[in-house]
Image (cartoon, rainbow, N blue to C red; front, side, top):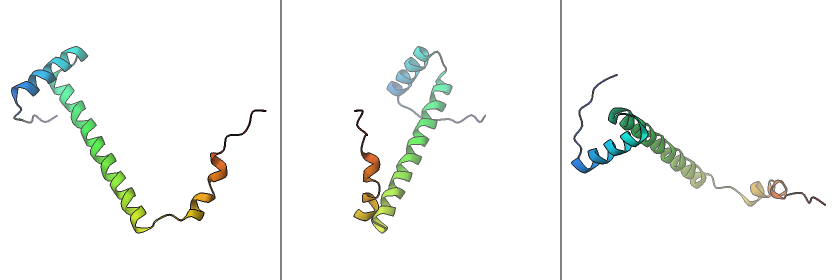
Length: 78
């Protein structure tokens, strides 16, 4: 692992330390997990934006959706 120096305000450090203590982990481990989670969210937002852009470039047609409408109906249990 690599050591990285960061500048954080006191209140944030205090909150991180409290959360890490409650979770039984260290400040570094808590921060690593938080950064991984944030990076996943960035990737999700990027993929969602790409998805939206694709639909803007190639909008779906009503025929395309109509094909799947029967799949959305729940069968009767009678």
